[in-house]
Image (cartoon, rainbow, N blue to C red):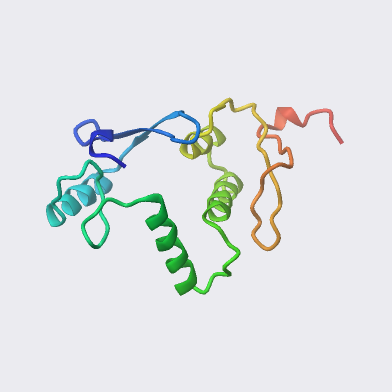
Length: 146
């Protein structure tokens, strides 16, 4: 996350997803803004990124991967569990918890944010994550079936 992506006055975050080129915009809660300001006060640096590692350098994808694996291992989570599996599980939990599918798709940075789009769902053993099995988002999409 870059400093220029955050507008503390407008309380927004605007980033373009690297993988898809889809712009993402997010509204920041006041507590998030307060935490960013506190972090910047405690960890001043000249890099364009908001957050830096414990040695004062910008995070790299390789560093974040090592950090994820370290946290996963300390938590006693099986080493076969990847970041993507956890992300997919959070997606499923949000949908199962009646979160607005359009908002969930936006948070995930998906290109097609049409609420009539069918979720891609795949059951992953022991995780409850869903992708690839086509699951309708709206009751009207299942009318006349079954």
